[in-house]
Image (cartoon, rainbow, N blue to C red; front, top):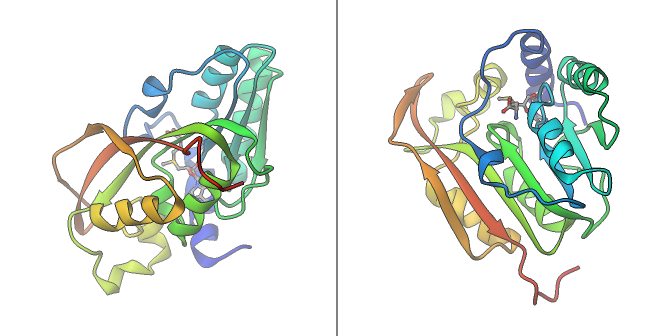
Length: 217
Ligand SMILES: C[S@@+](CC[C@H](N)C(=O)[O-])C[C@H]1O[C@@H](n2cnc3c(N)ncnc32)[C@H](O)[C@@H]1O
């Protein structure tokens, strides 16, 4: 579904695809311990850098999906895969709220500075839980806001696309993870608060595991 937020995100990131500016807010991939043969997903794969690194680590028996909503980013990521001759990667155009992958089919989900953009973050976390195999893990770098984002900015597509107006507080972030079924969350990195746009945010990298014993799918 194309919403006002997703069109603003598409426009902004399609312009940024050909630049080399850093779009990350943490080191998710550095904490991911990707193993040979694994199936991995990068949500908001941008220019494809992390997905391509994972494709090398999983080797020919593994596979990586990069998911992104921006056509410019997807094209750039595909070009980069072609340049490197990487075959075990596929870049899919999709909103994070409807991930086009089977239930319980993925060992590892990573994401860097993307979930804050989503219209419905609870749905995104539910989707991450759904696609992970039991015992599968996520490593996500993202931002959260120190205080709830003021109403005047909350629904401003341009400010959401700039990575701040869509952020939720640390408490709400934890609640959404818990609602999705992730009960044991490890904080791997966490910054001090810093100003961004009109608000104050902090960045963190978190790890969670889909419980092996859950009676979920
Ligand atoms: C800040 S960039 C980060 C890119 C990459 N992860 C990195 O660290 O370089 C955010 C990326 O998420 C994508 N994105 C934002 N909202 C999205 C959504 N709702 N569904 C899918 N992709 C989204 C953008 O197109 C962009 O490529």
